[in-house]
Length: 343
Ligand SMILES: [Zn+2]
Image 1 (tube, rainbow, N blue to C red):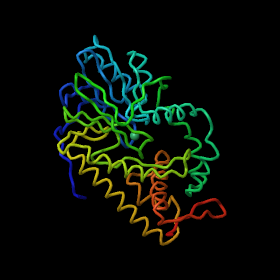
Image 2 (image 1 turned 135 degrees about the vertical axis):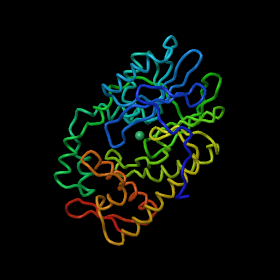
Image 3 (image 1 turned 30 degrees about the horizontal axis):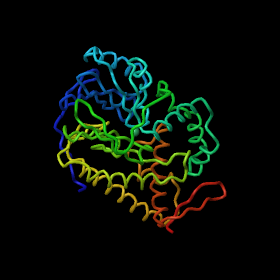
Image 4 (image 1 turned 90 degrees about the vertical axis):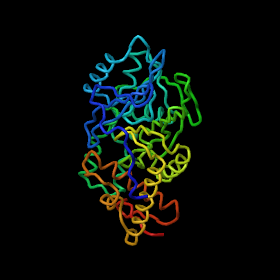
């Protein structure tokens, strides 16, 4: 299973500002991201009497201009009926308010992700709370790393251009119809609180958001607002639950990378990789270690001031999962730094 390689029916993605049909009435578009992860895939669903936009891209001039370009390509005599946000992250929801305002569309989102996004957006202008600084200090951040955290605090809300003040809730098990075809909402946890995926059995299409990606592993992090969370177990449970729901030959449309076939095997591979990492960390915990000591093992990309909170979040997530399984315990030293060791 480690060697599993997905099959990619479309080898070349659409260029920025272009649309590519991937199924009847389902269009793929890409927006740039100014990160190591340099793009996001968005989807447009066409009906006889309107459009549905799935995810919006980051709030930036570049993305806004590309949306204006896209609007010249589609039949805008038909209204945009809804903007569906798969989850609360800025690359997915950054322009939701702008698009909804421009088009008169409703925002459809899960309740937990909508509310969490509103909270994070609205705390953007405040200072880093003491609880959050303590959380990263306990992870083993140095003073200069903590200073960078304080300086960057509120970055989330700068990547979002407002949030609609009302929305329509979508939840696990919901169905809705687009062109007389049923789309089913399947939610997952771990990457975000209540991530929504969309399955259309008739088209054999699965819009997976960040819940299932072909080449990279989605970030699964503990955050300072809920410092005792165990998102990795939530994530593993979600992967196992999703696996039997996916038809074998379903075309998965992920938010990053290329559309692919082999979603169920890929889920199995992701679970296996995390379980292997948990095993390695358990071995390493023969000697007491801190959250930051796990960065090279857990976090595959380069660690910068921008990514240090993701590395900490993922390391915490693995340690909390091992603690919930009764395999690892923790002691804080006199400086408030956590040291983890085998139970
Ligand atoms: Zn995400």
